Amino acid sequence: MNDAAVLRPGKLPEFLPVAKAVIPAAGLGTRFLPATKVQPKEMLPIIDTPTIQFVVQEVVDAGITDILIITGKGKRSIEDHFDRSWELEEALAKNGHADLLQQMRDISNMANIHYIRQKEFVGLGDAIYYSKQHVAGEPFAVLLGDTIVDTPGVTATRQLMDFYQVWRCPVIAVEEVPRDKVSRYGVIQGKQIDDRTYIVEDLIEKPTPEEAPSTLAIGGRYVLTPSIFEFIERTPKGKGGEIQITDALRMLCKQERLYAYRFDGKRHDIGNRLDYMKSSVEFAIRRKDIGEEFREFILELAETLRKEASS
Ligand code: G1P
Image (cartoon, rainbow, N blue to C red; front, side, top):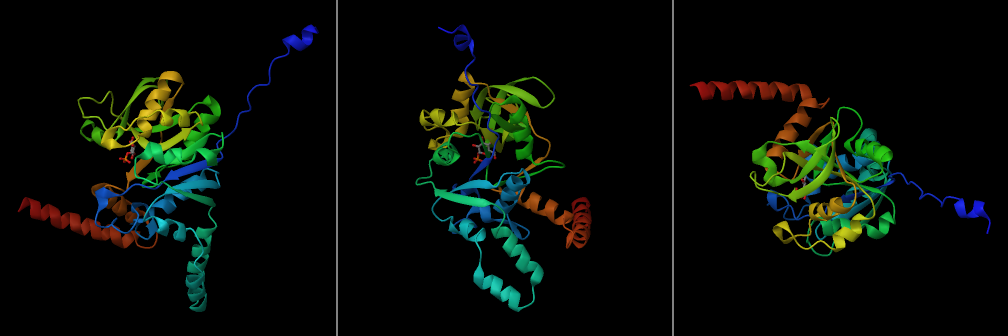
């Protein structure tokens, strides 16, 4: 036998960059009833822009144009929003609203958006499992459709993608939250390896403040590799009787390297009434068109409230 042939190394597995994004948007939105009785929570607007449009923009800004949105019953308006609306375009053109017309066209050209419907509301893990065929063996980004992440520089998704490019392992975005709020989130236990990076050793979905191993909460952005699907298949129903992605990741981190990255930016959870109001105010203050007047209104209101409180 030819020795050279025996010693020749095998072909290294090809490294694939993240080129696909999955946006789960199938949840019932119970925390926002009655607004979400017939309207998806992902379509709740921040001023005039549906939340999911910010999320799609984050994907596009990260350089990804292939998006799979996991929808479900009652979510059809999401598809309509990213489609063309001929009647509306015609009316805008006829009435001389060139800017608005362009804006509407731009929305339908943002990305190549595919849709699949989750048949039963049995949790985020199950929703993500619906993307198995679409991601077809490639790494992929996951962005929760009811969460906006505002970043000073590159988007949160891009931060995770850049991390993945170097470390080549799945990574989840985390942020510090007050201990009395941990029960709203998945929380990690990790070994810190630098200012922003942790090796995940354990995860717990919605722990009590006493149970929580840390105050590092999962922030609704993930870069996952296809091995997650095997773990989801083995994940029993957990918190709320749902198949939790946190539980699947918990199994994964015992067998594979999983990182958590404390991203640079601020998360806005739109599915929560109080956060929704806070986010709307913050975004309105920064808007070019209404920001100045709105800021004055807020200052006047604050002054009135202060006087009321001290009288
Ligand atoms: C989901 C995840 C949770 C994560 C949270 C972030 O929970 O299950 O781990 O911390 O999103 O918003 P949900 O808000 O859908 O209940």
